[in-house]
Length: 597
Image: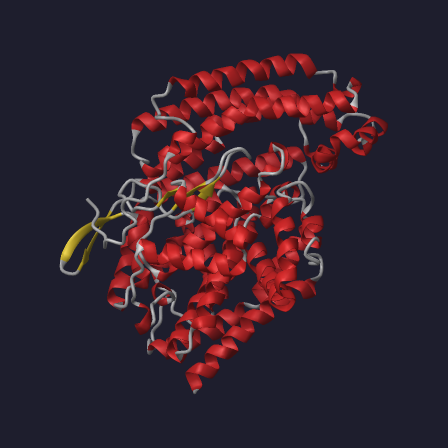
């Protein structure tokens, strides 16, 4: 049994009855079978006939498709939520496998829809785009035509859906199941304790450097011991993507994600290049932190070492009240949306041995409120994580005005509300604080959050870009993957910290590069975007808030370029990203002034 400090989060558990009463509910598989039957009927009704549809009848098709798949989204969300709080439950795993299998069959009945729409004549397509009744689907329709060149034949698309069950998806699931099963024995306070990965990694915030360093060696040891499986999983996932990339005609591996995000490769390259150029800010900060902490041999295990004044443990109620106070000071409606997540038991906060690590916000359909999973240990970063995930929930609630097609926030902007929410809380704390030492802690925490969400994600993304290029030509050995990752670590941190040998295994502990290739740059995109947006809020005051809410409410109903234009941001301008980095430099300047005075 895992032992943690009592924070009050132990009994904060979500109520999933809005979804289903239990995993034994017959409605789950009945719902999936009904969805499959209706999907088959949809295919029979519309396949081969889309070019003959009027705008009104195409609207009916869109609405019917959404109605059919909503139960599947709801079921998928429920099973994933249950699995997340007990990843060892064979019963849940079996149900998940059944749901995935039927879901793949359902998807195959819809494969024809976008493929056939993409082949409609230019004249007919323009008729659809100009139709008032299809105005809500205009962006979706334009994307379908724009990405048509990457489509395969219907049979080929169906084969890919089916082979993924035992191919790419299977390797992703193997990775998740394996790493979720890791348990660690670690001695602390004179006692040998069993911990999961989240608890062990949280020891990076322990004031004792011996504990920090030993904890990370223990953590990475499990990844080293399972390196054969982890390397094979990564190679096979990347190779699978490489094959599909070549079949579809994408320019680069990252282009698959960029096209899905409706971003030009060149725009994402500017983001990567600008962030990489600013690694000097990372070097500058960690040299400063080593001085503050008097750690001449600072290692990567020490980069989150807490300041002496930051050892405070937050209870659940303290964290909740702090976050809600920050939201209330910003906007009443945003506060109410955040508060409803607590009031309606939409949060699962305890730490448990077989619970998935980390944190996330889950949403499925506009009619249902999202759910938040946390592993709350009472650390300062747990408070920031609470604000972050509630930001996602707030974003989803504003998007609920959209139809299902446009509901989920577009990927490059999906982290905007979450990071903005963190900045609201930081701003509240800095504004109320008069003690220089405490301000020093707050600035350090904020800089470390930025580097974690921006520069560190940029490093992960660069590793992905380079490893995908290499695996495109040949499978990479485990030592080659470790070497490539270590090179990226050295580039990001320079001489500011010592990179100890065990960190060469860190790449294997990053779920996103396995489960959602190239997703990580979205964090960097959002982080630097939000810094600029927050600067605009500070300049414009309350007049900015309605524009910000409109930004959030658009979901995926428009392109990233058009959505950011609602707040007068130009994401194509390199100077826009440089302005964001100026904010980071100002924070470091403020920190240096405090330290040197």
